[in-house]
Length: 109
Length: 290
Image 1 (cartoon, helix red, strand yellow):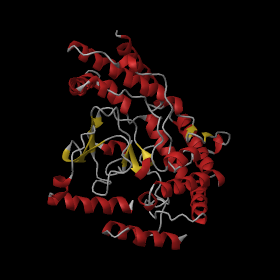
Image 2 (cartoon, each protein chain N blue to C red; image 1 turned 45 degrees about the vertical axis):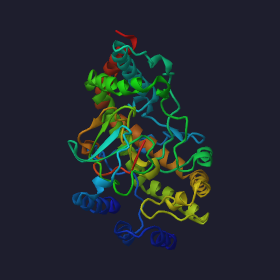
Image 3 (cartoon, each protein chain N blue to C red; image 1 turned 90 degrees about the horizontal axis):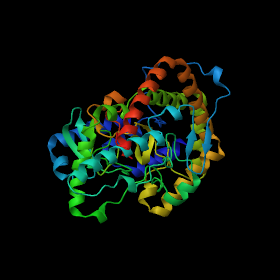
Image 4 (cartoon, chains in turn brown, orange; image 1 turned 60 degrees about the vertical axis):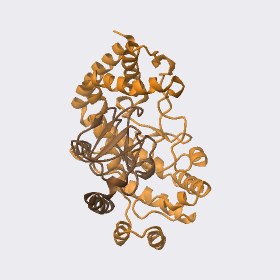
């Protein structure tokens, strides 16, 4: 849990500066993530088969949308699809705390 | 063990995040208690319940499987219905239907890594990457051209909009996911579960692997060193899962907790099963064009 809390605080500080969002390339891969619930503060787009979302986005996702070409998204607690996971999101979720998965995502399958 | 973890911390990180993590005691960061709204259950009456493990594909067979909304049968049905609905939109615009080109029979389940890697064949081929050829089959739409590929995502969104309620149910979270997650969490945190994970980690360290202090798994640096190094670490992790018996212990515990919760939450499961049957009928109707 310590890792989750510290990473969240550090990356939030970067987002607040604007540098992270400006530097993040859009991958247009179908799984769109947001920093806060109800799709506030866009983070990045990922594809299925993302073994690590990267240190800039680790443990930050609070809501997501799933669009084609992604069939669905499964969020994992740790890198490389380890640890706890969600069910299969076909459309997404406006509040991942409903899953106990707020600020928990490290990889996406 | 502590020495190895300290070394792993010192060489693997330079950021504040990592340094802070290393200042804490090494922990095994297993599945969180994300479904703590479920009350504690006694698994003593479920001594005979165990998990059957497919070590080739890292797939456990557990009491809750048939109920799970992540089962291949259910997931295939959802995706098939979406593809048929998207086809309807596409054919209205003059494009060809493609849903029937996909084999919708139940697929080979993705490997389960809740507690770590445990398939030696997969680890030998893919390292830390997910094994190929698992999960739902997909269609390569690139040969269908630019215009098709522009139109299809729009039609898929329209298809999703036509069945929002059913897809919302299919995502959960519902009692199936809550029980599974709770069972994983309790299995991991139990005395026997913690001992199994400690045995697993000791085995890996005895084999020379440096572990990540956050989760007790092989350091990510093995991936940075190249595929050969990554595969070596992954194979050791999977081999230790089997030789120590740790993975069997953990899934057996999960099986007992799942069975206990299925017994304890029988009324909720019945209501969930009724709703699930109704939703499945909806998807069947879409697939059949009714």
